[in-house]
Length: 90
Image (cartoon, rainbow, N blue to C red; front, side, top):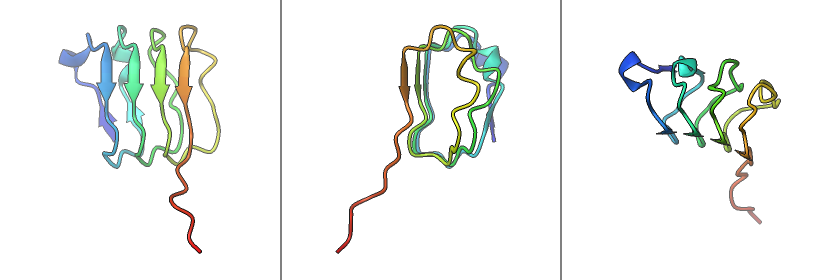
């Protein structure tokens, strides 16, 4: 689990890709966050309470099975949710 500390509340972009994260919490404190990159983790759900200011979200290559809690993001312009299945084997 990863949680934002109060001194990071003014973040504009946050890069947390490839850290083995299973969930995110505390991002609602980042009222100015525009870009969130959490690809290549083990996140299983898009958490409620993401900052309303978010315009770019990359959650590709995680364990997400449903696209939930995105309707509450009025400024979201770019969403990446792809899955990397690796290289095909013969």
